Image 1 (cartoon, rainbow, N blue to C red):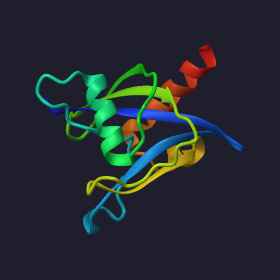
Image 2 (image 1 turned 135 degrees about the vertical axis):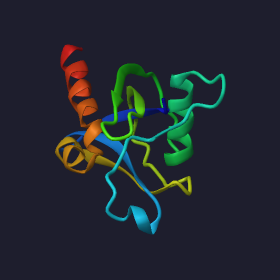
Image 3 (image 1 turned 45 degrees about the vertical axis):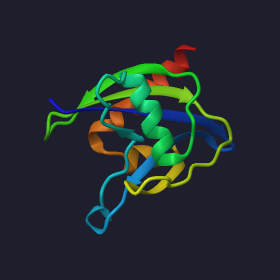
Length: 133
């Protein structure tokens, strides 16, 4: 089974909560869904360490404290995506990897419309986590 690990970083903005998403690069991905920054763990690397590394590689942002959000399973491929949530300061993302052509903080309603359908559940989990705090 394929696995990847990523972060769902968030920040409070003037008009509400925003989350950090990335868009895959390449002409064939022009209409592709957005994603949390994520990637495949290296051999022996923990899921959280992989999530931190991938976020830094793809967005230039260093993740702070993280809490696990569990995983989602892609319906078509069966791929398992592990996610970790954490607050982000006012750092602005940059595309620091050939794998992404855009990295942006977006409002939750935008995230729900543009995020890979199988990752949308992570937004619900983030909202539940923040409501419980």
